[in-house]
Image (cartoon, rainbow, N blue to C red):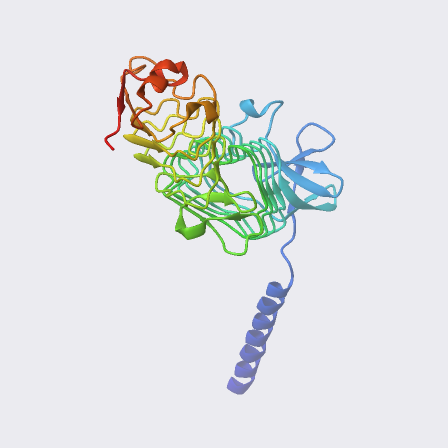
Length: 356
């Protein structure tokens, strides 16, 4: 009798183990969804979707994203959903999907997602980190605009493009690594990321580099520095500084431009308010619109022939009360030329010749 009981228990144990093993092999069933008032809209576990062909796109609820703000806490997006008996793969986080969801603290994105839409997480100030899966190949315009709580972000090596203003205003972001797969970075992608102290481009990137550990993004083909940060050292192989390159780098204290640079783009050092000195070499032949607007430090210009420089009239514009309180230091023998040139003299209360 005892022997029979032992055999029965052994058989039951084997059956339980077999069932558990089989359960691991069977993929999880897609989450069932219910309609939310139109032909293509549906909801599952508090996440809203629009059905597009055979795919499901994460979206906001309501007529406008500004009416939403429904998402909060931790959100886990499934890889597939089932609607009316049909399974749809979740392939995209749609435009403005989490717009203004200030209560959102974390999100898990499945490997089925290939794109993050425009303004997808705009204003999600409570989001502190995000892990983007290797399946994602594009990040849309203003996708993380104003995510001030974001301190780190993992950009996968599947990523090929970062759209314009994708991370604008992410003031808590301290470091970024650009993988070698990224070949397109849009204008203003990292504008206003005032906390950035480290920028690295992975070696082998066909378009960008961060040579000599310079803490910047440089377009390799034309040696243009397009994004810098508080700790950037401009290499002496750079020939131009791009538009908005150091936009609102509030922690930047010194601007030392090497004599390899010939052009400085518009708004390049816009409101770098902690700068105490700016060195402009004699190699510079072009300075575009408001390149140094809001920079309160003294300027040391080594340009000895102003007639050779193409320059807008408001390069050094400064709002009151610091309109003309800075000092301009110029080469010996060029004082009168600088005093007579309103592009320079209008914005400096004092112009002096540098000691030889």
